[in-house]
Length: 309
Ligand code: HEM
Image (cartoon, rainbow, N blue to C red):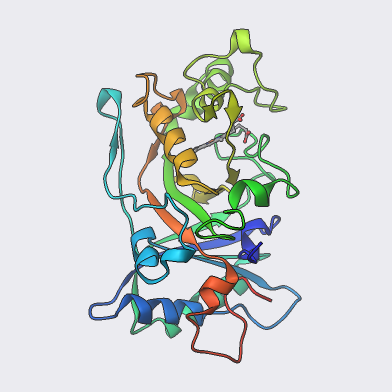
């Protein structure tokens, strides 16, 4: 398989910076891609930074069609469900994810990247990310219980060899802001909204699983087969405004899109109960190319490219 950007699978980092950027006026997609491909992590194997980069699907397809996952497409219109619910479309051109053990090293790394991109791209959104009680979301629930293990994750999240975009992944990136009302809900309501127990993350049995529970809504089952994704969600924010940075990788965009349609109640009218207490503020898809596909655009031969070592 074409080597993927390894930061996708680099679990354990507790500090994160996410940047979404748009191309500066007059910069060609090729020049923009070249500048991104020239970014690299600090040259150290100790206390390093994981950098993962993604591109607007239509931009990447324009310059590297053979390296684009077949169904990758921009998040170019909002998804509207029952009761006025909306998942906004806020597609940008470039997505950068800096992850490390502490904020100082990723801050330096992100500032360094911005200096290199000064004439090429402008930041449209910045998000911080941090760890809350190891792997809990700020709803208090464990996030990632059903996530594939690192043994399974590559097969689930990367396009297989022989297909367009081999070694690439499709990313869904969304910022969800939690409402303070969540904290006032009785435990039983919270657990029914998720479909798992809060303390030990045990899934409700089928006969007790509400159709609107998040784990029921976010299952993508096709011909009896569950199609999985690999999630790297982290909390964001402070004590007044906070929520979830949703980071979902998949070999096919259709899995992610189906989950969104089911959560929004667009598929069958049943809306995810969780969406009544947390609101998507942004939504974008990005192609996260393989290392060789990205490296082809690098004009800097002295250093490894993003995700490489
Ligand atoms: C505020 C936003 C979200 C929060 C707080 C959240 C939280 C959770 C929690 C607590 C679980 C159960 C434990 C686990 O297996 O990880 C879960 C499961 C899951 N979530 Fe989310 N999630 C959010 C958004 C999303 C979105 C947008 C998607 C997909 C597009 C998604 C896909 C999934 C999947 C696939 C599972 C596993 C379902 C299963 O097979 O049991 N989640 N999520």
